[in-house]
Length: 286
Image (cartoon, rainbow, N blue to C red):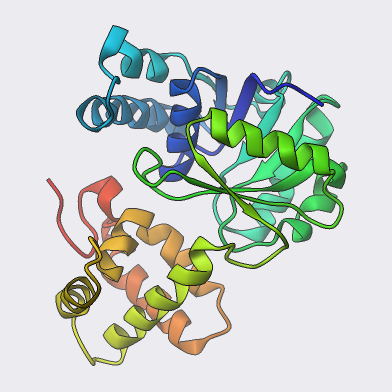
């Protein structure tokens, strides 16, 4: 089985940039791909901000300029074939849209070498719904990270009925070497472990808002006070990113969730308020 040393991350958004940066910080040879030069320029800024965050929050990040070197070491591409040309592991973190993911994996399956293991970071789609597009379902599985990787160190590993067990174990080992805590999910489950617990909370919060039962601040305050949790559900939405929240709610069959998607688009997304990443979402951030 392939010894993973070269990692390619597809997508340089909020979570994709964190995955690539953490892998680089852990010492892997990392490449990242996105669709155009503007996205790549934005990725460079994200990596630099992550370096600054790590220096402030992660022990040892300032030693020998480790955090800065991790940001500068990531190879950036707009050509997907070049990005995956010698990858041992490809982690996909493109938008949570089935058609985009299907197209991406079709391209990667044709371009990547035979040794490459494929992993999707999808938070809502089962890996079995994407595996055939890769052309090598036995080397495909899910590797799901939580936002703010340097704090929330979970890496959920979930295979399909066709995933080779050695591939599964290789990815579990990789997650550990990357500095994460592998969460081995024993069978396919939409939402894995984390989102199976989290999504009902976020859905309930959005319905309280849409139905006019309570405002954002009241919902969050109630949750924090009653449970001792550090963040309320709308603060979590801001961390996850409102674009991701919108994509998931817009695709839901639940009319309340589609109503929430419309609310997000009108009141936040169309105004450039996407959450913590842009400095403003449900809350404002310095």
